[in-house]
Length: 356
Image 1 (cartoon, rainbow, N blue to C red):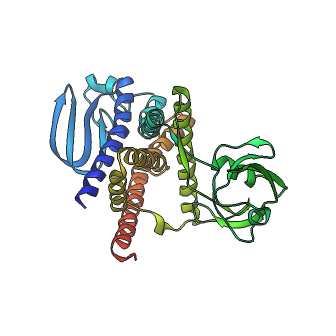
Image 2: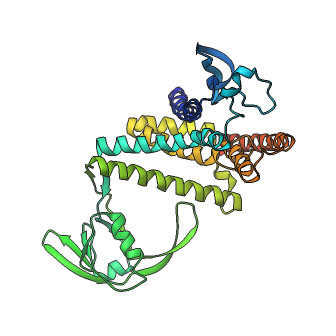
């Protein structure tokens, strides 16, 4: 338990720091004064004031914040501080300052995937057959456990993913699949069949298969600098895309809200990943960082996405959204956020104490 709590605090600390540092860095770039840079909420535990900025560690570790000069529209300011006021900056600058938080979370994921990809390479799953389903097209075609698939219709394949993609896009047309065996290479004609299966989100999807399972054989492929950069963006984009799909499906009811987890689940997962090694833990941080970015960009007042929505409306109308409207929206957003927090804690407790 202590291991999980420590791992959770490490994960949360890194995520919060990058998010708030994004706000801080762009604010300072645009000449906005920053009064507080806090990791955590509530009473100040320790810190140091440099210039006008109080860098602090606060009691409640479930978040953080950057307090900027003139952040509140109705705040009374010393005339000397107006040039450093957030509210008095152009709407585009305010938009970029707020957007920088989620952007830095995505950037963190890119950096983590880049370092791991460049330092250790990537694991490639070989197109090696580990099982053949009885009665399947592969079974009838003569596939055997231990076969290594080398080509489909004369075009070489090097990974299981590449092989599965070729079969999946065959539209049921006959294929000639080359397999390597100890006695030599032979070509087996096979016609994929259309089946209904579950995807990662538990949805029914229809796809073409031949009825083989992976042997789980992998090899490590070293990447050049440019390949590592490309791989880091590819992995980050895949997580962003998946997270957006999940959020949309949660909102439409296609995915149950029972699947949503909170701090307890994250702590358990962080502990498990920490036990698996530093690489696994940092990959977990990258995934959670992207999740945090996507959630923060939701157009809910209180979240960054809510502020960005107000800035977009201001840019279109040419004047800020009415202060009273913003206050009401903030109150509604706070209620939504509290309800979400109650939901995730409830789901966590149910999983922790009542799941089998």
